[in-house]
Image 1: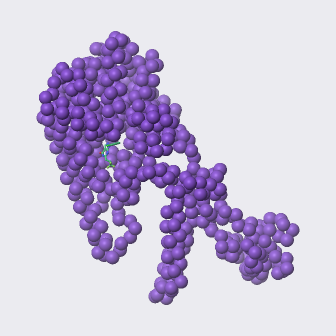
Image 2 (image 1 turned 135 degrees about the vertical axis):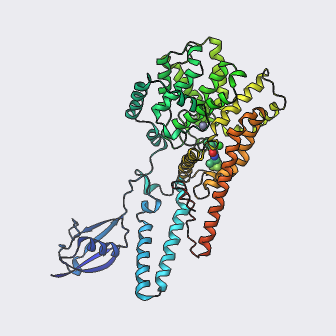
Length: 523
Ligand code: BYE
Ligand code: ZN
């Protein structure tokens, strides 16, 4: 075993190191890294006197102080989309953090006391971490341009592509759908499909296509409007492929809204108060109401000045888009379920669908509910405006009705919604756009979001509809009140847990809330 000494210069400083020929290469690199004050992701380059790049290894030849090697540090390249600003800057604070923690432990065990320097170092790392987190959202100012140029985040439209279903997946669903299309749906399932307690999580997408087809058959649309079955299949499949792979506003959400509309149709016996064109309008609107949703809401579209916001001048960009895609699909004759409608019938369906789909913009909520409450006072089905606002309320109710469902059905939907919201707020932080507090993963919990939403949005809306249709009370109002109790209990349990943690003097950064989205609350 021979001991070697090498001399080198780094950053204008003279340094030297001693090592053994059978030392570990990584250990030696670590020594050089320390001498260069480099981070774990930095690239080290060692040059000899001739300016040739040489390998850092224990086989490195010894040299003399007057023929020093030259050590250079190159900031690490950032290729990952998810890399933080810290790692883009060439160091990863979490590694320092981990190392310090290990050091802290060791020192504490060995010494029984914490040296001032370690405490100081920890505070420094924490301070630096916070500073970086604090400016990370300012990336849009271009402050970090040179660091991230060429390697930075993918542009928005690139991300969009990945939201699209793969052809392979879509084709498999279509094949399964077609292979089942001759199969009879049992009376039991047809009956179950009428109920707001229907559990979507038990069915796959091709089965949902079959069930949507069944709704068209059982409502008598296929015969009444002379809809050819192959056209219905093509249309349903086209609708399916035009829903994106986003956590919430996906094809399953479309199915659930359509199924709730279908359930309401039977529960309040809509055919006795509306004509078949109106019911066709309602069910078709429900199926089309979120077509091609990108998973980011109108506020994002407007603030980020997306193509959609530009096209629709900030006026309900998403809802205008959903509706436009719906009619683009219907323009293809092999998908046009309305192709045998009379000109006047088509005109009415189109007008109605545009009205219903645009009514799903929650920015219009108070206006629509206000109009409905006024109409309810002396409701008259012969009044066109009354009928129109009733249809708008029905699609709105179906759209946000998850909490009417049994808890096992509703709660995963809330998790999907929060996931979509968190994805948006993460992107907004990254792009330096305004973030709505209800979307912020640091501010929102399942109960905190639902308690207010149920009290101030769901109950007033459902109760207004309940005045016109008292029969609905046990189906939509009672379960929502139960959901309110459920989330109130959850809130209390969370508060208690927080207090317990605080009193046992282990106040940490995590309050157990952020875990909720993926896991169930532990009480
Ligand atoms: C709404 C608007 C857009 C998309 F964060 C979805 F508390 C919704 F505000 N929906 N749909 C169902 C909902 C629900 N929003 C909320 N709860 C629902 O059950 C509240 C939200 C989680 C939040 Cl309104
Ligand atoms: Zn929707």
